[in-house]
Image 1 (cartoon, rainbow, N blue to C red):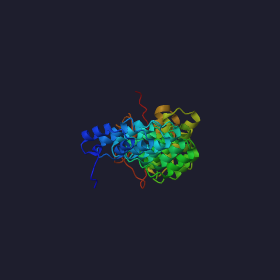
Image 2 (spheres, one colour; image 1 turned 180 degrees about the vertical axis):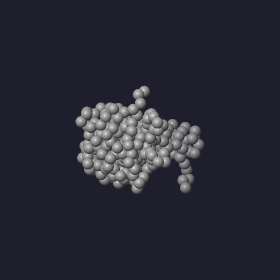
Image 3 (cartoon, rainbow, N blue to C red; image 1 turned 45 degrees about the vertical axis):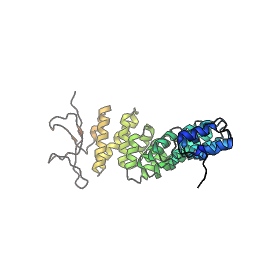
Image 4 (cartoon, rainbow, N blue to C red; image 1 turned 120 degrees about the horizontal axis):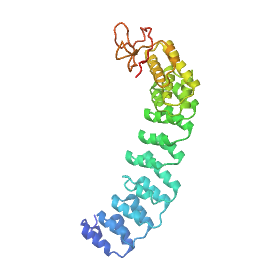
Amino acid sequence: MRLFRPAWDSKNPERAVKAVNKLQDKTKLARAAKEARCWEARKAAVENEKLTDQNILADVAKNDANKDVREAAVNKMMKIDQKLLADIAKNDEGRVMCYASVEKISNPIIIQKVYADIAINDKDINVCMKAVEKLTDQNLLIDVAKNSRYSNVRIVAVKKLTDQHVLAEIAKYDHDLDVRIAAVVKLNDFSFVDDILKNDTEGIIVSLKAIEKLTDPNILAEIAKSENSKDVLRIAAAHRLVDFNIDEELLLDLIRICGDELKNSTNEYTKGCAADALQAFYRRYGREEIREYNGLLIRTESREQFVDCYVGCYHADVGSDYHTDSNPYPYDIRFNTKET
């Protein structure tokens, strides 16, 4: 136990600050900045113009328990040591000071490394999101995309990546479904996409969701035409192409692909998807070739008039939806032919 405490070490903030302001000795100011029991006194010591020791200020900026004291120390540092300040930014436990610190770093390489470290290691997802949004370095983005604890942070990083090999790896192995989908959507090399669709560990979940979000018509066309892709994925890709302007050759290929599934598939879900796609193509292009295919009845509001119909399996005998793989029935595909 200390028998004598200087006035600046008083528990009374007003008394302690008043004592600090009277100090002239730099050694005593340094002690007050690091040891005073009142944070107000430590802050007053840091702000005292006579305290200029960069090592003392850096120690306070990095280790003081109070954010106001740490902030005062950062602001006081006149000659900023880049690496030290980066370390302060990364190790500020509450990250209250991290962005104030990073803004004072002039070296762009260090800034990017600090943001990457924060995005990967911080416990606050909001802080991580702010950090990853500021990242532009591809190597650091790869690190974040693979190692951040938060899936939303990894998704932001994935959306900024350009390396097709890395995107393919993430699309295959990330444990979060949405991260994998984000990676597939960024792929522009069909060989990578095809490999992922064929080896989807979630069955077809990732593949279907990815196809829903793909915006490259060339990739979609490759999936639709690939005999190595699962039938339902080919149909899904074909259906997505209804939203794009495609040439006649591709249109006829897609009609044939969907029609073949309608005629030959023993899976009612696949047949339904094919009928849905064909109807979408018919409504947009009105191609008579589509009428040649049998396989699924389009359920209508009225059995007398075909009006604004929508796809479904319809059992002619009992008049209800009928989905089964074990009892297939021959259906006719019908379309809305009423003029409106």
